[in-house]
Image: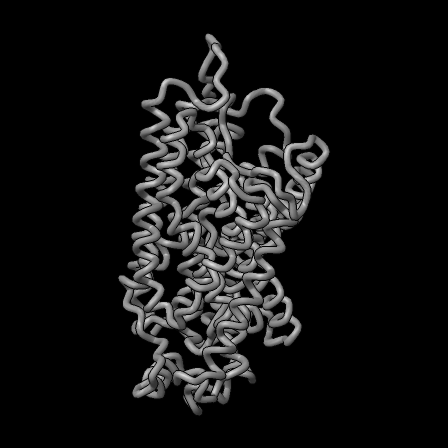
Length: 473
């Protein structure tokens, strides 16, 4: 028994999937029972398949922003922040998991948002808007980088907008599988090829003679343990946000847990991916930064490789992730809409023309939005920072600090605060700090991200919107 609920089942969930069951274990059992015999069954993920989804979500292209972040922050603060952010995300993910065990009827982070803020309908709509925008921004990032890859590998043989359209169509097609169990196989391949890609990039950075844009310099490479003199708050905050974005992915976790056969096994998948993240991110970021220094760093770091063959080979192994991670977030968004439209109908659980046509149409709408975002914000690092500050503030920190306090409140009754031990007060203080970190992300993070975008346009570092200009690396 993980603890009592913080509130009754939400009204819009009360009639779905589990009849009149009220306790967590009763609801979970009823969900599995009602799925038996359906053509399309959702609660089919083992913890191994869930781990594959997590690896595909976290072992991703954003790793290649770490050398840039270490160049701005300095190697020592960069690695320390990597470990600290990983630990915070691990802790908040375990809080989220506990919340889902207590309330197994929740299907996504929007249901959780409404429950956390006392069942208010405005909380559901507010969370839903952020949820869809966050996922669509991530899809847009992968359209952007896929177009960047096609420009790089073909030496800009087509207009960049054409490459973005091609990437969007391919991603839409790959989004069509309806269950996470089916997507987990693609996720395993995605994580594997990403690992090969970043490993090759680190090796190539070490063995090539000079990085891209090298000029004979007796001080090459400049590698610093701390930030160099003159580093601005905007640059430092953006580098920190880039690191944070790569770790923070709690927005998808309720959807993954909702499709697990036994949600109690979720921590096995979570611990495995967290340990791998810390090791891989620190090594790749530190090694590539060590060989390219402050002078020749790019984001993503493939652009730092001076040998064109090295650059194209290592970047090419990233293709599965360029496609799949956007696919994963598109699937999460499509579920959010599809389940609410077709809940309780045969179109959700059977193969019907209406069901499949609607699923494809919802996915197409999300990818159209992603295409527009990719063309309006055509730069990698600043797009990562903007997403991190706008959405990770809530989905990475604020929600889970509030969730901890709400669960401890119901565990201890009306006198819970007066009965706290030293450990209890320490954990309460930690979760208040987590909420304040989220506020910092939202305020200072959004300011620095927007200012960096304005500076990039003023300095002519990026092309205009919907441009044919080559964005290859």
